Image (tube, rainbow, N blue to C red; front, top):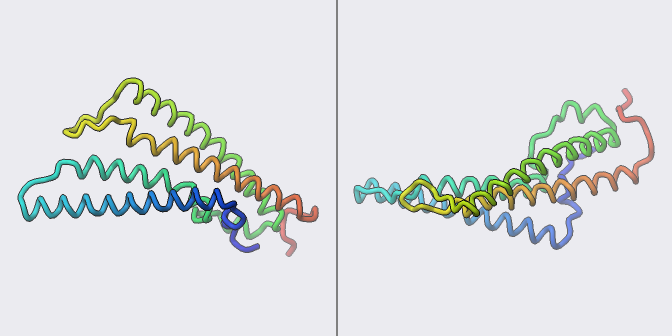
Length: 179
């Protein structure tokens, strides 16, 4: 069986739009991160002072890039896979093990996402601010965690449904390759 690319092969226009939006936001965040770092390096070396925001905002951007790219990475099948186990299984066995892994990953992601939402609500309700010169309200940079967590849960659900549908079309056979 060819390498499975998640649910990316049969995605709807809405899914492609959502993934494209995430890719755009991540690309813009990466550009902003580079601009902030270059500006801070320039002001430190050429002008003798620091912008005092580069560490804080680059950290926020890094978290946003990480969480908002999770669903796109899953959809494009760019996460690592245990190929030596998958290679010994038939197509049906591969799909069954992938569905089992995706279900476990979804359970973990739902639990983590629940905690991300709780953290976000606590930060919003308490008015927590970053202990920095900028005093950024913490709910702003933290919002990327529940958004990214929700998107990766949806991507996992799409993949599970696609793989179960594909399993239903395969003839019943052994789960291990012969020979």
